[in-house]
Length: 189
Image 1 (cartoon, rainbow, N blue to C red):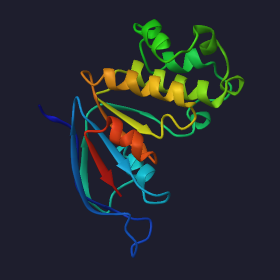
Image 2: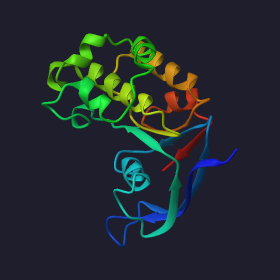
Image 3: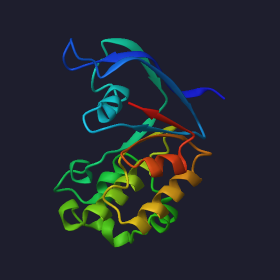
Image 4: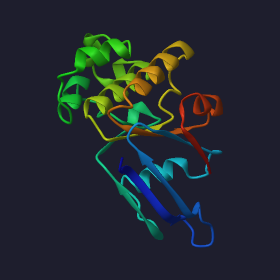
């Protein structure tokens, strides 16, 4: 099976004399979850920005298949004055909407609201819903369950794991227990 993500000899830093990454190399295949674990400021979210090509590496290369992402802060993931359903329709087909709504414990009516009308947990689940409906090869997850209570957190992660036949996942987390539970490999940075 071919790689859906290849990071080869990646070097990056915001300052030339301090590199967050120096020759970082790893790959990811469909069906795998790899977890990126490290302290705050270690460069975990920066790695996603590099994968998304929002930042340019000093050296090395990144190749990825079609990806979607779930960011840590759901309030910055949606336009504040545009209903959620419209924002999801802008980027994804709704053919599996009902199935995913049930899996992540969201009511359809939630999608008819504006982002500020939802709790952080509801909005994060809507963000996960949107990312899944985009049917990516690669799903980038930056602390996707940090805004969720423990029961919903487990349900959402279980649902994501069930879809590994369709995609691979790169997970950023501070939660080493979560990483050990779901990841095929843990990359410490």
